[in-house]
Length: 360
Image 1 (tube, rainbow, N blue to C red):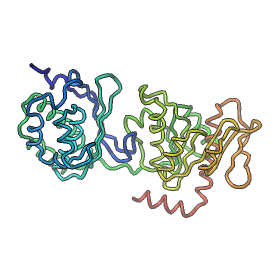
Image 2 (image 1 turned 60 degrees about the vertical axis):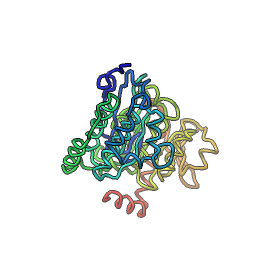
Image 3 (image 1 turned 60 degrees about the horizontal axis):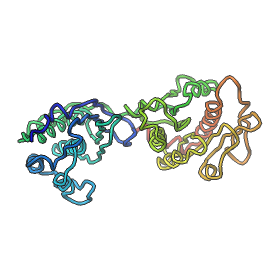
Image 4 (image 1 turned 30 degrees about the vertical axis):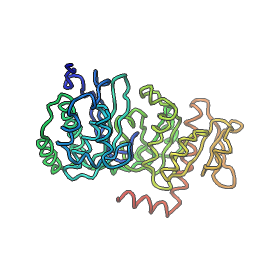
């Protein structure tokens, strides 16, 4: 039976390089979005000699354990039948490995529409990563067509590309990043109203930007997560677990022992912030802060009697009245963030740690 032409069916939808911390990894990755057409139902086991041709071209594939967890695991998956996105991911990694780049992280996931997939893989050189994606796609198309032979041309191209200057890594430092589906602009305005200036770099980072490009900076002193309800991303990233993972990316750039302001009862986000070795400061737009919140909170801000109450030390502090002209969340979150910055600025040990990370 004649198979559909893989060069037509398996096609590139989008290709990008993510420099900063991102939804998939804290390291730089290449993101390849694919549409696979008829090959959503055709796998490697359906094509005679598919595995043999791929292994002849890439003997190093024997080292990939894949989900089986042992040497040769990926080859076993090929023989049993695995699909184009997964194969492209592994070939993109193997292409880089063949030219001496030590990479191993990769993921393949369903995309934003039926028949579309997102492939993520680690890179050490951004342009090598992008070209590896395109070459891996071409190689897998040829493997499904039964025309794959040698791949030295691809390796020669990548070796030459690896000698070219890479995009500089992200070292930019900002004071505060703000994300979430809420009123980020109002939160920024509240920080400015509280005494910060434009020169201190308060960055509004929409969840969609994090998803598509990663964080636009390398380090921050603090961060604010307004909520876990992003509205500017595809529906599948609005799923509660994925939404929490997405907005939590902003914590990956915060200095170690720095502070991330998060909503009360956003326990998945609180765990992610602590995993990033940051401290949690919790805010609520009412007086409802649970004991579970309090157990992990370095500080708490809540609203009581129409006023913002900040619990930083032993004595509650008055953060001022809640104004009717601005939503409550930006006011409370900003008040807590300003208090966090005040505490950080008076801690010489944290200042030294931030300086070391900035130099690094």
